[in-house]
Length: 172
Image 1 (tube, one colour):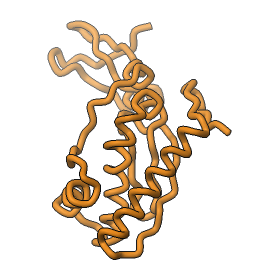
Image 2 (image 1 turned 180 degrees about the vertical axis):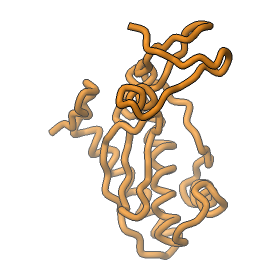
Image 3 (image 1 turned 60 degrees about the vertical axis):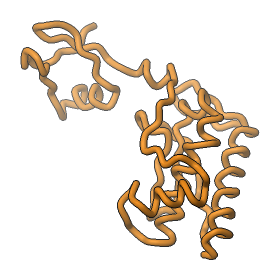
């Protein structure tokens, strides 16, 4: 079985999904042994979320991984992204709501998962970075993310150039 990410032309193999699931379970079990606390393994989803590599939904005990970044950066996911998101879930289960990248999370990353507690990633994916739309103003061109572009299309937002202050209009 493969998971096909709608409209993204990215397919994740069953083997890769199983590797991700295994790594999540492995980290939760490790944290459980180290902390002596009963922890619940989160559910996992694969859905594009902008430029985020992963997102932990604490109340739902769910982690969402960006399939575009995952497809192009498997090793980085296994070594850094998955521990990052699992640390959020484990910290929430132990301490409740705390500062997202605070001392508890940093300690979990460093002391329990033996990972550098990095807040942001430097991964690249052509599928993610190519999702921009070109707009124009009086002084040139500006690229907007798909999220901002969609707000313009729906009539929810207008954007102005930071230099000339003209309202941006999409180039065709």
